[in-house]
Length: 127
Image (cartoon, rainbow, N blue to C red; front, side):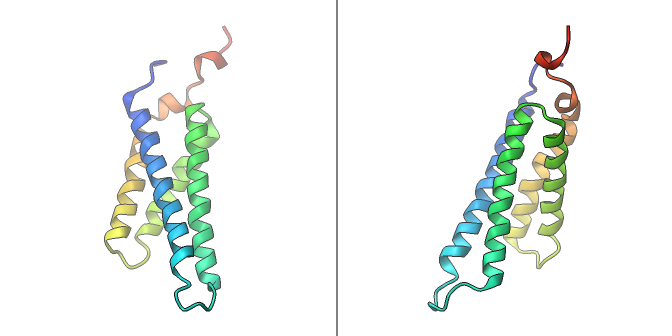
């Protein structure tokens, strides 16, 4: 099982796509919410900060998954599950459904390939 399954790359691409979406949302919110020229509200800053933090965390998760890091795998599962749950706790519109799908797909793939992620990489094994 040292051969990397093809779904590993698909998972990483989907997580990076998810990160790009959250980064885009965070930046879009910051750039478009000050249309009246009165400054940004605390809620806008918080929403943007959370979106950008999620994007950064997702990128870190991909970097850790490439190294088959157990904590990266567990953190990835937790964050993707949290994003999926939060996607359906508000008014569910088209963007919420897309967010849910873009979080569930890599979550399912992570669970499917858990043996690959949780097994020590060949260079980490003593021989």
